[in-house]
Length: 184
Image (cartoon, rainbow, N blue to C red; front, side):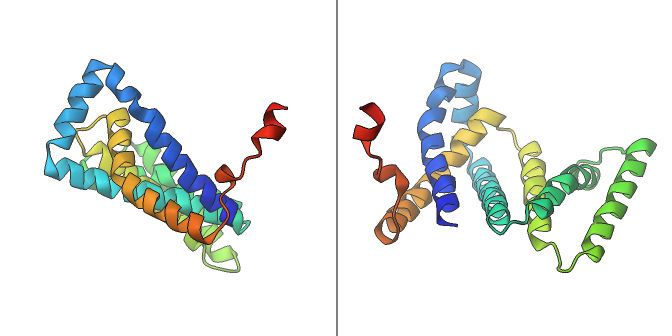
């Protein structure tokens, strides 16, 4: 469990350092500046950052608990939830073929839910957070790369504090690398 949490938070730290590439494309620069000047956009970016963090953490937890099929069910449901969200929030039309696809996917998901021994809460958490993230991002003005950059920057203080706490209480592999073994 701890190694997977290390992966999540170390990955977030590395992501925040490497995503500075947003400054190399002028349209991303303008989009970045526009997004950070809007309180509403920053609030929604913080919300989406929390949603995708819950999604990643839920997937890591599902793998750690050996419930990968349940996690996969969540990602299987995500496009269905996205289509329903598009219909509700964006008034998108769903063709007859897509309606049938939603119907059959829903039947399959309900069969999975009621045929199992326990309720697949991790799968639903993963599906709902991933779909909510996609729906929220679609409603926003900020494009993908500057949005990811801002989301990562907004989470960085929390990740940094958590990493310090984690380092104080657990053993972090990133600080225990034996460089002599690597280079010699």
